[in-house]
Length: 366
Picture 1 (tube, rainbow, N blue to C red):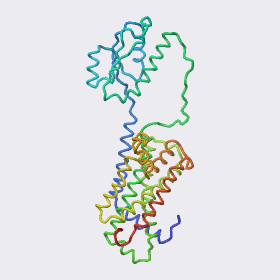
Picture 2 (picture 1 turned 45 degrees about the horizontal axis):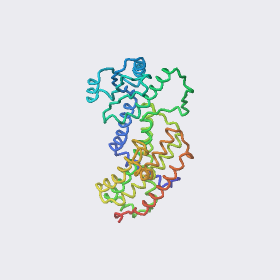
Picture 3 (picture 1 turned 90 degrees about the vertical axis):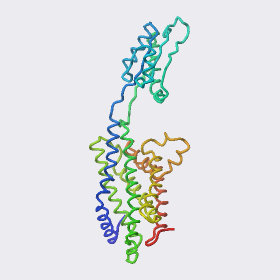
Picture 4 (picture 1 turned 90 degrees about the horizontal axis):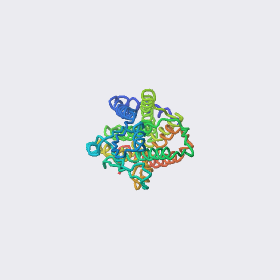
């Protein structure tokens, strides 16, 4: 977009006004940095071994072999002991589960399949999906060794994407999208209300400045502020937190700019509806808060209840964060994220029409 001389002058004026509010600029950077640092530290910790107690009532070699294989596994911290003591530790939270091996464990002469009693606290049931496949594989290995059966094949996993799977890598694009939404909606909305309250809009109304010049100038100034702040956060994440952005930075910033325009238009609309600073804060929270929890910022949309997923996927922040995450984490091109770009485009049209329809110089829109 080519700005006219008048628009460039207004953009410079608005930039100077925005930069005077150093406290707001500081806190808009401070909280995302704190979030990224905390999540980076938490995701860098090594996975602790899962505590498992084993009650071995069998005296044969198969049971001993089974206990030995579990003990050698780095996934488990095995304690062999009496049933009463280990169950007490399970209740106290010192054990995740207790395996009770029956006396006929591994005894083919019994003619029946031995059952391993798994004692688990209801609060630890969520971990069974991780633990049970390892136990099943250990039992299968023991059975093959006992019967002298060689595996028919082996599986070799090759990771062709070769990228980190840390939670912070998932979080960063969503946190960037959340930051630009907050900066855009809150910034433009509060600016419109404040300019109206101080009579700035009323004075501008009697000048040759057209509404389009005013909106384009304040949008460009606010976008420059947002791009600088997001760039600082990206540099912090890449240089200090060792976070990799796999895809193109140009494509990444293109989605950022589109998302900024969408949220700026939404902020203009809210600023035109609000009468006071308190009301713009309330209206902003109505728009911002649901998107924070439903747009896949902190966890994937697929993990949400099925009935809410269609709504969550249609939110503007969902399209922006999904597009940014696919570029950053999967190296996707702009063509590959066409559905996200289409969603952002639809929201741009809706937001722009609402902003131009509701915007007024002197009074609050009805």
